[in-house]
Image 1: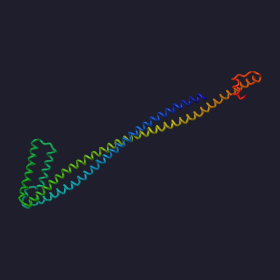
Image 2: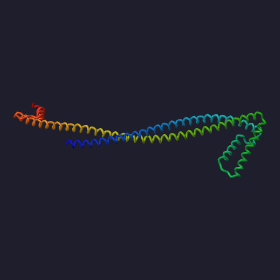
Image 3: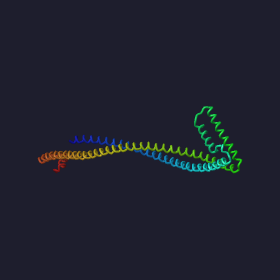
Image 4: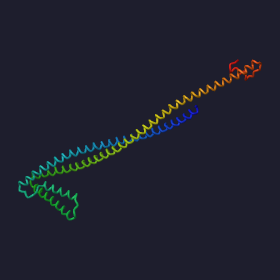
Length: 286
């Protein structure tokens, strides 16, 4: 029976070691996934912070665009008001045959835009350039006529200055708008990267949870095996103690029996050896 118990204990010990090794492997795997998750979460946080910075810069540039647009529009309105006064002066003084400077300027801008954005044959493009040149010359003629009048000359110079300032500000508007769009694109890209790293972090966390739960289950099995081993150790120790006690009792009986035999011989007059005396002492017969 004792040998059977010892063999069974060996099996539980081997099973216990297997659960312990597997638990340690799973805990190491869970730690690996936890590190990956934490790194990805930090990366996500960095992407979000970068996106927020770009958002603030985008909003800052958009705000500047709005302010500059208001300034540009105000300057254009002042220029337009002066050009209206100039046109009224021209009509009043018999220049009805001429179109207004403002109208011609709009036509020039339209033709220049076409030249920049559309494809023309060489002849057509030459014709377009000549038309633009002619319209500009017309403006110069009308402006030269107007400049003969001191008051109109002053208004024309002011209108030109307002228009130039408005044009300069419009360049700033374009630059700021482009910067705003650039930061908007960067913001969107950062948020997309954040979404991707957040998704990867969620996957790593799920793997961490699964590995941790599996490790906990292996640990429970390990504890169960350890309890069984302790129970086997108690039973085996008890059996060994009992077996040892039984063996001692048998030895004591054998010694007693032999001591009684020698004692009877001693009473019968036989001489005792040193070993016989020691045996009698051990059996407490002398």
